[in-house]
Length: 150
Picture 1 (spheres, rainbow, N blue to C red):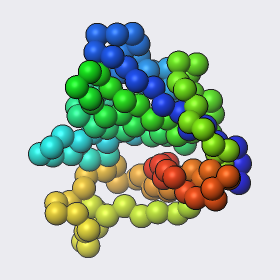
Picture 2 (picture 1 turned 120 degrees about the vertical axis):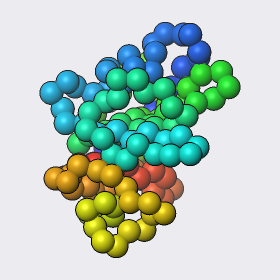
Picture 3 (picture 1 turned 90 degrees about the vertical axis):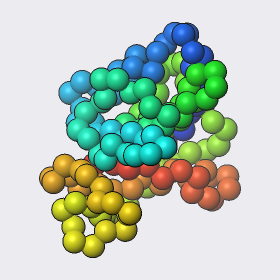
Picture 4 (picture 1 turned 60 degrees about the horizontal axis):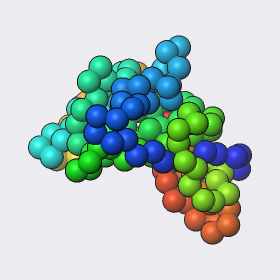
């Protein structure tokens, strides 16, 4: 298993940096990214790229290098970074001796006749995904699983 980065950041409403700025800082423009946005009544499906307006209650952007998740709170946003490269300096590392390990995964959705969701999940036809496990070596437990493009 290889060293990993697990970190968090809280953004206050109206504060700096904005959620869009953090997304831009975490992912290179040359990097292939995907996003998944969630509202109480619907999901976006997996979309190519970083969303222009990521204001939704929950979401995530992922790439081969890492994943950034966010969730709205009454006072702003809580963010979680899971990656194999260090996050921006504004993030606070979570305690632990983090390591990562990749595993295969499958998508079920509109391109598959057998689905495991109430409605088909839309995603790019050429997207193959995997899972990256983030384990704390001190506890020997997987605490987080991130999506990665394969």
